[in-house]
Length: 618
Image (cartoon, rainbow, N blue to C red; front, side, top):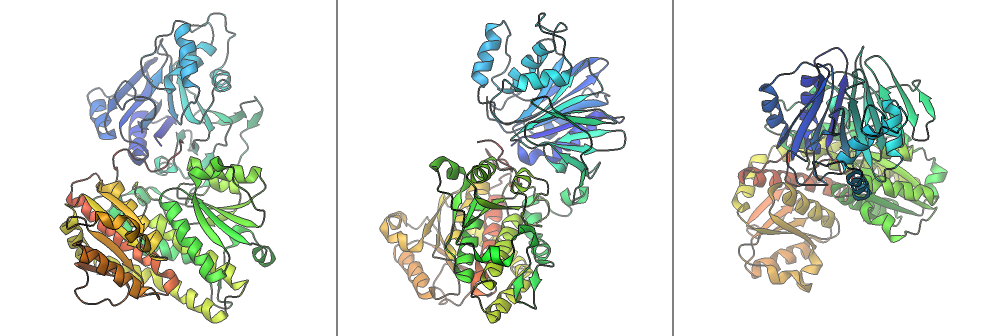
């Protein structure tokens, strides 16, 4: 959640900060602000609303500066207004702080500050940090008895009193060439330029200027200048500056809209290429299997796996359900998926013979990261499935599956989810072939996977027809998504997409459960999307459609097979694929359906209300 940008160097900081915030706005967009040092004074500009509002405000008083910090907010503590927007400062206006995460003992810290005579201006947890750092700096600030300290020392001393998650950047007027950065549970990355340094919560803000980055570890603090950096731990241990930077596999062009009006539609249309990248070099025709060297497990270790469990949140969880079904079908190993947000709180029984797969597009989802840490603490075998090299989950797991989806900016996941499902099919194929999946069936799946990109292209060519259906039903206040077995996680993901970007109420139900309660809600103004794969349950799915129609409910049939003409009020067809792989294709029209329903309703598709792309707070 939230976006952080920092800069120190020789160029004008304000355009760099604003451009970075624009790149990160998908992480939070209820308010924005920046602070720079101008003529020896801290100049702070904040506004409620979007980054464009901040840009407009800054144009009224342009400021030249070579160091600064910026923030775009997704509210946790305090209403989304200008007062609560970041950066936050101390009373004297010496210290400015931008912060992602949640300080869990914020109320206690705020009470202590107020008891010492500090007047707090905002309702946020972050403001406490600015006052505490200022106090630690000693005689130049409010605490005359405190020993003199460097800014780095003051930040470390402050963070030793803090409980919770944070990614933060601190600016000090009296240290105009330095930023101090810290991380614990919320991502922070340093960008290394030529006589300039950048800080951000996501590489999206950096790639226009540099592709050389260093990811901070939890419990690490960095002091950076235009020409150097060094890191320390909260215990004070000096880590130096000898860590080798990583090269980001992305550039500024990957974050451009090009001919598209928004990122979600762009990313929907990038799915064929994302699938090609996910499959490139991973299909083994000779042995009818998959190559996934990143999981770092040999055939004997793969055979020792007795169960597979996927852990993810939101769309990553539904992709995990698809993966579990594939593994049970192809490898005949028990498999399931569970919301990572629930996993560590239920005191899970961790089986050493279970392979746990932590799924996250960003690789920073806090619930999933905490589940990984719980698994490691209990001796579990866990791999990551992430889309960002160097992300926290990727580093914590140490090995796993890189999704190769490319940068995904829209809050609603499309190409990352499709890449997840395709990668899980590869994992299922690999596990199946070290067991009892025949070479013939292995070749069948290999060829089926190879056909997917062009089949997705075929679906995209029918976008206009799907849009017409979306427009017809966009006035409905409620909608059901109905699936059975392979169609069930597809229905859940379809309902999620419609909810999050159109704000229409949508619920997913297993087809067999309809007559156990939900059928009472069927009426003429409540459409149902029924998923009908080409499997041995076609007759039962047709029966479900007939039950809904008999009670006056409109039906949109999403199918890869032939169903009776006129059975549904509208029909969306996808190409027929290998049955195990059809859920990957069936997801695509539901993305398009949700997109065009939201567009018809005039929604802000890339920035749906109350949501952010990367959930790094509980």
